Length: 112
Length: 114
Image (cartoon, rainbow over all chains, first blue to last red; front, side, top):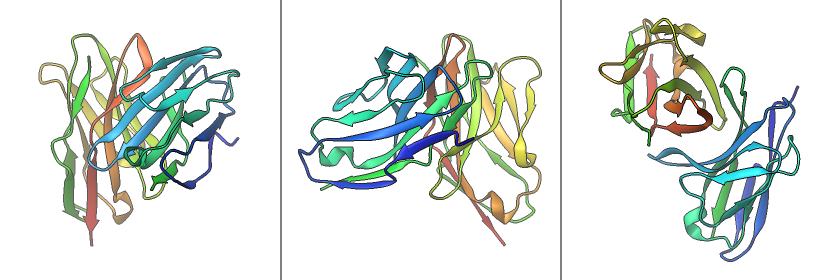
């Protein structure tokens, strides 16, 4: 049972490039979320999904897009990378039954 | 809207000493409360949670927390820490009707010294 799998683990982008961070879960959870972690700021919610085909914005959605075509996958797209998007990104899958969130190992993104 | 405040950015403590990590929250509606731990270069994992019932909640690795509604607090405690408890600890809150939206505090780094 893999839980939540994020790829890649590390990525360096140039300003203006686009990329997709992948997230997959095998726990059949309806809820999935993307967070970014910056020093001294904890984790901030970027986008979330309450089921396939349903997504919504979190606290810091600008510059990011998401889609949820299947229960398992929840990719995060950076449309035009900016240095302010340098961060560690975490995907989470949340059990609707017991409210526990399961996190991936994170993607460390650097935009130069 | 909900918010979480962790006043202590870092807490140094000697091994086998007790520790308390403070968490205060703000919300106009009923919430669920959580503590997550993050070891270096890893994702977060759940330590414990308060959903309802007894205000004293026990979690993994000997940690416990007490929900205090009047003080809007959810402080994390451990009577005797180990070197392996060195990590970052995050308090989080979600509304009861939208548990998919976790709001995190800024984190407290627990540094256990021998």
